[in-house]
Image (cartoon, rainbow over all chains, first blue to last red):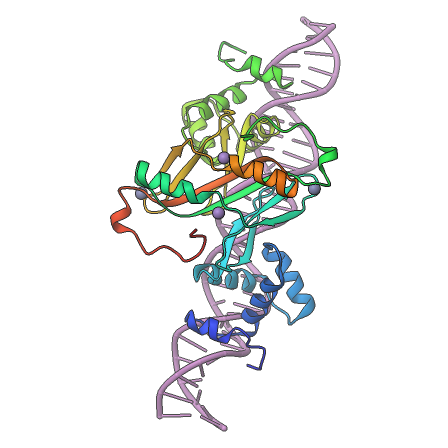
Length: 152
Length: 152
DNA sequence: TCGCCAAATGCAACTGCCTTGCATTTGCAT
DNA sequence: ATGCAAATGCAAGGCAGTTGCATTTGGCGA
Ligand SMILES: [Mn+2]
Ligand SMILES: [Mn+2]
Ligand SMILES: [Zn+2]
Ligand SMILES: [Zn+2]
């Protein structure tokens, strides 16, 4: 293993081997602004670095997810699995249903709710997924009347 | 078509035909407290009512979703598609990761955020999906240390 | 540095969820 | 009742993700 082992320490800390593919995948995830499908990662990996099998990509991502290095979620429109690096920072994003642009935000509205639920029904929140969609500045002019559901 | 056409008006209002299967599926969804997979619905339909094909279940649910009669989402743990009746009321639920129980809540923490984002970055929220998980009262005693991500 | 072995990977077959093409049936307007 | 578009059943197919197994490789101990 050559000097490409940028993530050797991280991987060893998790008790798994530092390999070419694992380093490449971590590096690629670090460059990605938004969650990626396994296939997107696979294609990019084939282009820019060594040959790799799709099953290896899935296995690696699953391993990372089990170590909490990676967060796995599902795309809203087709349910396909998405993977992103777990930066241990709390972020959400807005999806524009007009142009499909993603916009990062730091807001998280769960904090208060967490206290409320703990005292009211004795439920301990450990995590959540929040997907927000709507129309961005550029798309507002073409805005359709909003669907009458889920429309607080 | 006999008197089972409980939803004839509703269906006609949406511009689609009232059929035995569509009525059965709407009825079944109305009895369901929580979102169901297509397969769960399919099995129940086969047991309690007439024979139906799985593809019909999917096609019907897709049709309903396109009319906003049904809300389609994805299960957190396996990504499988879930379907529920759109009651046009705003609800979320808590998933206990200990016993997989679902608990309905009426709280929605999006209201304030909606105003904030509109004024700050000119984004119009039209909808959102929120999935909250943690430990219910009964499972707290067996609680594992929380994962260090997404843990506001 | 060498050899060992469990872990990681490639490859190909396979599973399961969901979709689609097509022939037949059915709802419903006339 | 008749006609026709929409709905359905059936079977095949598509595609994301998984798995079994043979081979390779990383890391460790001698
Ligand atoms: Mn949050
Ligand atoms: Mn809400
Ligand atoms: Zn937009
Ligand atoms: Zn529980």
